[in-house]
Image 1 (cartoon, one colour):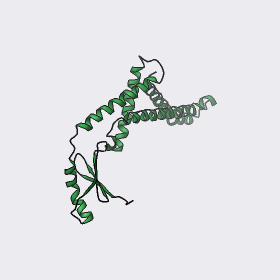
Image 2 (cartoon, helix red, strand yellow; image 1 turned 135 degrees about the vertical axis):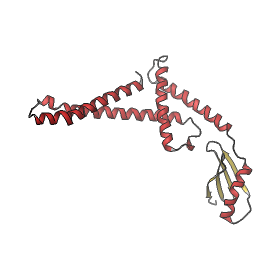
Image 3 (cartoon, one colour; image 1 turned 90 degrees about the horizontal axis):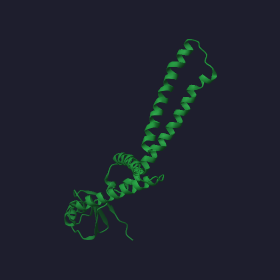
Length: 207
């Protein structure tokens, strides 16, 4: 059965149980007490039974949400530039990808009847798709040149060292992080490769 449909049905059942529980606790019970009507023990246990079922179904729904999120995050690892995305947006994207994955798995299950396999296939398809797209986006970006990055670093370097001398020891472009790493002496600078902003620096320990 489709994972998403199960989640929807459980959510519907949980909503019905919750409403029934609230009505029985806030409406029926006070009314019967006011009318001095004593119910049989079996009927009196109905609210407790509803509460127990509601708790159980809620736990199942939470577990299913965690599974969806986990699968979605696994798919999301295919996106090369995810480190640049804010955490709240990452969580939202991971959950959305999880929903998409299980929806796709439901379609694939029409062709592949073996349990669980459609989920693995859907994860693989989406992961590869994200990897290819993110690679294309990364290669299409206009990064600033090393010379431009060094020019952005110079004012900060002079301020930190008091020396106008800028001798590059090492420089490396990291497309996955969208940054230039530039080492001048014992100082390492991080420059945002698209905007040219200096986003950090650190003094390297001497070996």
